Amino acid sequence: MLELSACGDATPDPNNPLAQLTAAANEVQKAAEGLTSNRKPVAPVAFRDLMAFLPARLADMERAEPKGRTTTAGSWQYSQAEMDFRSKDGKRHADVGIFDYAHIPFLYVPFTMILNMNVATESTEGYEKSAKVAGYPAFERWNRNGNSEIVVLVGDRFIVKSDTRGLGEGWARKIVERLDLKRLAAKGK
Image (tube, rainbow, N blue to C red; front, top):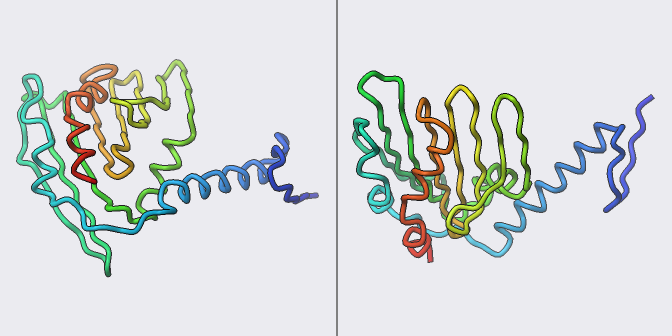
């Protein structure tokens, strides 16, 4: 027999997966509303301007041509800039991206959810944890296979992301820490 109940702010029954899922969905909705409730979509920062914030070099790795674009969907626009780095032997790489979703609410939902969860998980395989980078909320992930990733919400507007493979623990974070995040945040004001 399946029992359903709704109890407002009550703690979900730990033995009822549906109640736990419903509570989690409600928290995600609240988080998304909190980030975007008083904001209207704005014109994005031009992708060429975002490209200026990407790293020019990274260790002894080769840099690919930067990529950027602005996308229009109806009355909404967003822009992004990305840079890839690869070692000559192909065993190490890093990807860095900056995304200006220009306060388009639904584009922030997955990031808002993960950044507001305040989680920390550590295992024999690696870790996932909420963090701060230069005072901005972040989510960091590393696994023992040598892959690392970090996502940072800069100035309540820009998503900065770094993924690495073969560089070791914490490299994604190190890359993002070297970017001028304060100046990027100022671009969004």
